[in-house]
Amino acid sequence: NIIETNTDFAVIPCPCRKRAEVEGIRECKDKYPIHNCILLGPNAKAVLEMGDPDIKAATKEEVITLTEEAAQIGLVHATDNDATNCAILCACCECCCGMLKGITRFDNPRAIAKANYISLIDEEKCTGCETCLERCKFNAITVDGVAHVDIDKCLGCGLCAVTCPSDAITMARFEREKIPGAIS
Image 1 (tube, rainbow, N blue to C red):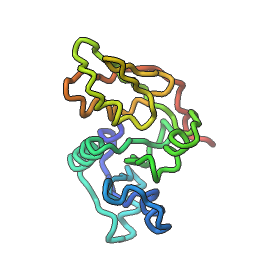
Image 2: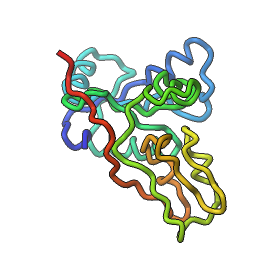
Image 3: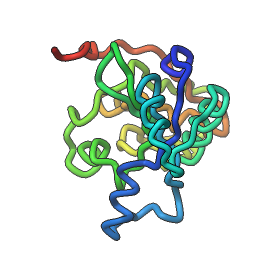
């Protein structure tokens, strides 16, 4: 877990939402806050030393709470595609994030590395309420009496599972292609 393996954290304004706001094109202004992205380890230390009042140090517990809150409101967590040195934990929205737009608007399945998890539906528990359908940013869920997950579209973000009122969705390990190490 990238939070557990780090000791230094800096909460920063989301660069994508900040850019969209400056450009006057931010669609999610009333939906998602700006301060959800987290720098980790040496990168957190370095940016905190700059003294920017818009960047705040955070404890491990605060980061865990922040990530849980971000998932509850519908932000997708994403990180570097470098298994050896994770520098940032983003909390992405579908309207401002360039990486997520690659999938949500341009249907590019390689725009972001998928998590090694997938949503599993317990059909006995599923009530067909469609909460998961509304939460999924990637059109990976259909509901026909009960929910079904398209494993090719599911990124494994878990937004569907976080708010399932009947606890019918769990996240299960699902091996994907390996994330590369640092490029030399």
